[in-house]
Image (cartoon, rainbow, N blue to C red; front, side, top):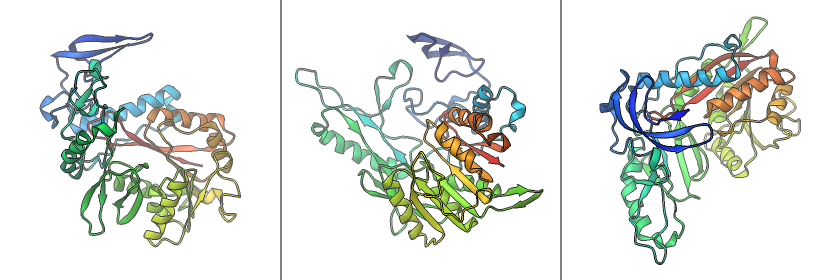
Length: 395
């Protein structure tokens, strides 16, 4: 297999072979001899595209990017479900309202100063290059997919690194996050321990700058609309809304808090104590009285010691939004044993999601009783190869 970044299907390209590994090789495009009909290089809005590794799809129209990502999800699912009748057809990828200027977090990195005896080197602050330049930093003075606030503050942040480079003998990473001030004005936050504020669908979320939060807030309302539209359980042919919502991997509470108005009781479960404190604070900031956050244990996440005794599993929806590595057998076995009426699996890695769905449906005790109602992609990361996937399962 030859991996060629920026080359499209059916194109004829002239390449330079960069690296050869045991099972694959990597090459860099030198010339597109016969371009794909889908390619339109004039669409790119970034002077670094083709050099920086951050974006891969700027040469494709948005509708083609969305279809490309739908096929990516379908390909991942087909690996684990070769009999495609086991799952519904992958739905259309939902577009992001913003296709440039959407990232509210940027983390360019830089190398340390020259060591004694070495020739002075230029201070580059940016991201790794593409292909044969993957080990070389591309110096970025702006990022086309970053928000306006981040780009407005990037020159000053870059200068601050250069002025204080002696404090970074091994280099480091620059943290920049867009935040909303008390007066509604947007600002840049660059201190790890500082508090970032986001407003999503009228709800306030505060969290430490170093912690995880979705980086494209323009598409979050569309995800919440999708989850709200599908917030029902069918029993004996009759649809009704679940009374309980259990947000596992809840972080600072984005999905649980946003959907808490649909239920009598929302319980957020999180292992990380700092995220748990942020989630509880966010419930208080939004004057929510039906939200409870508890510190969970990976080995007994649905135990009676964590969940209130009044929770009826068949009348509950469980949200799971794990990291890129996905979930694991310990969690999925517990989930199947708990038997919630509805499951939302939100994932930033379509392959680990497909793997987990296969395990849950075929290897757990009660998994075979679930129906996968929908799988849809959401374009959280326009211009890049990445896609968020939402799977909805019903008992």
